[in-house]
Image 1: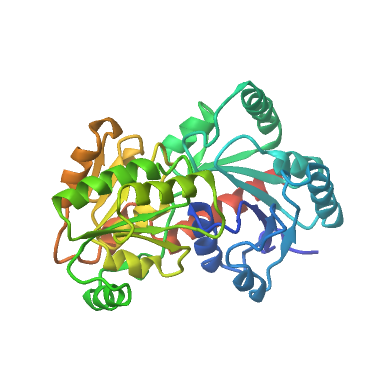
Image 2: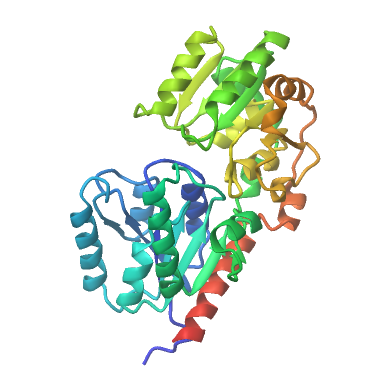
Length: 381
């Protein structure tokens, strides 16, 4: 008989997609730092017609990736494939975790309860609705809240703000969006090399990292940069985010760049795997989001000692360093532009100790997550 205390926990993670964003960064950093003698992750790709981020790395490590066709493409096949995965792996998984930005999809946890997975975790990564909340969506969210109350028995959130938004008065654990802090340490040599590679010289360099979506508010970002460029013509804006498919938001960004005559100073860099180096090259990170859970990008920027300007709709929990500023969206693009021009700082340094003390060291936080999942399993089995 296997000693329950020494048994390796098998966890099924849901939420990794093909678009490199906060959830994907959170999951892969945690995956890389797991104590594989105690716990291991497999993944379900719920848009299985595409590969997920880091798929080769995950498979090379020996973990599995199950593919399910997108529910928007073929809902019946989506649910049938989910059913078969859990049927064929009944009794294999001890934990299922749904990482989500909304309550429009909770089916994996419902199915997890039906198939007897002991620990069923909902992890809130956001603090606002991406889609317009018409009657149909409100009804769906209302029904899913009831299903969630029945199916989930452990709640995580990336911040107090994200937890209160999704869970109200229900208890939850804040799981920090921890990173490999030293990977982002300020380094003047890396800065010079990366700026040279990007063809940058003395320009004031603004950076934004995020998918093209309503939440990220790119349209206002371009209004801000137009103001920056008027004050300081020697300036550029780097936009990091997936550009492989046109969307209404990416199309609007391209239209506005052309309308403002900024084609030569706004650069669409697409998806990048070297964001840590691009942050070294930048002078300020600008995020005028309508809402955020607790953005990993904001933690990465502060780890690289990069001045960060955020909308005041973002949780103040993200303000770890004095160089991080919160500005109202209602202040208008001119106020933002002036704050950006005045925010550049020199002699950036390592911020490891501050971020570690705040709970953002990936090693420490991964150990904490492991303990929470293992303890929950032992309590329930």
